[in-house]
Structures are given as C-alpha cells and as structure tokens.
Amino acid sequence: MTREEMKRQYTVNKKGVIVSPGQFAGQMLYVPYFWEKYLNGLADDTNGGFITFFITDEDRKEFTELGEATVITLIEIGRTLVCELPERPSEVALEENPLLSAS
Image (cartoon, rainbow, N blue to C red):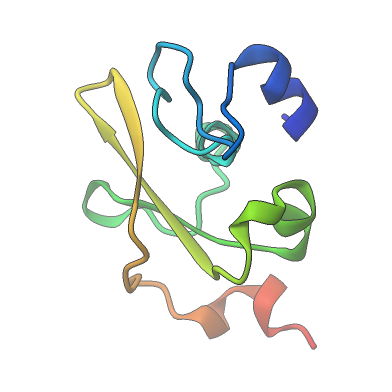
C-alpha cells in the first residue's frame, strides 16, 4: 500500500498522525504500511510479540517522516490496536539484513 492509498483510507492531521477511529488511531501514517508488510510475511523479526522491520531506502522514500530511523517496531494489543513502540534493540543483527549490508 502506498502513502497516497493510505491517505485515501485514513484521515490524518498535519503531523501525519491518523485521527480516524480504528486499530491505527493515533499512529503515524506509516504504521499501517508496515502492518501490511507484516501480514504479508515481510517482518524482519517477530520475537516476543514485537514486530520489527529494518527501514529501507524505499520505505524512507514513501514516508520521509521516518527520517534517519533504522528500525520500527510494532505491537498488536488485543487484536484491536496496532502501536509503534519507541526504537529498541532487535534480536536480529543489522548485518543479517541483506538490504542493509549490501554496499
């Protein structure tokens, strides 16, 4: 799903926060993008209920508000809410991600 598709699906404020009700309310617009990647089996790490992704240049191109972040971690709460967690260390080493280690 692209940024434009999500902007048609969700109401967001000027800061890019989803304000429409539902499982992504209060989250940044990129959260449903990463959630969809998870549902398609594309998470980099899913240990302990935490769903972690290494942010790629493609992700940053679509969502410039990701800035210089290297990782995003999501958690599903009670099957009704998906939240982004503050950046935390992952069980997966960065050098194991071929997208980040190819230079």
